[in-house]
Length: 161
Image 1 (tube, one colour):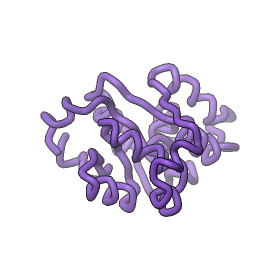
Image 2: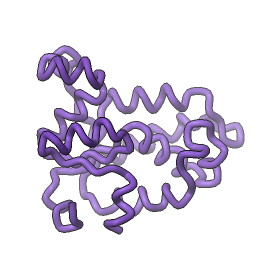
Image 3: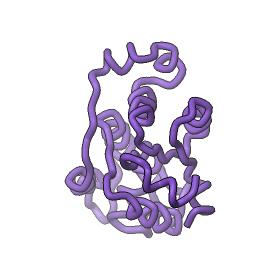
Image 4: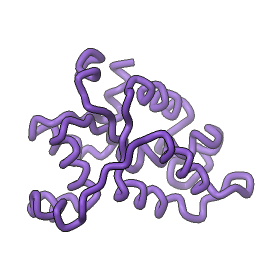
């Protein structure tokens, strides 16, 4: 995928682990190496790269499923006695939240649901609607790519920017 192709997307959906990175980095990039969810996996440069990539899009979307996963992963995390969860409402004010009922997301493709679960099934549905999925989940990324859908693995954006 080239930078020119990005402009053809309806918008960007950031998958769970990368959204965790974004939420933590938006508070303080120094916390990325201290938080158990990001330490050893990401660094402050990854946050900066992710932030620059997000700025390429006029529209960023999320789902209740992804926000729920992010909230569960960050529950109890504190930075200087401030709950990390306090950054989620600020993020939600800047994006559009798309939703599908759980049953309809499952019925779209029950095999996909069994293989990937609810959150990734909703994510795949949004890929089918023309949104670019940014993920570090190789299993999901390859699935979407094999279906001819727009997905970018986080490590690949280093080649774009």
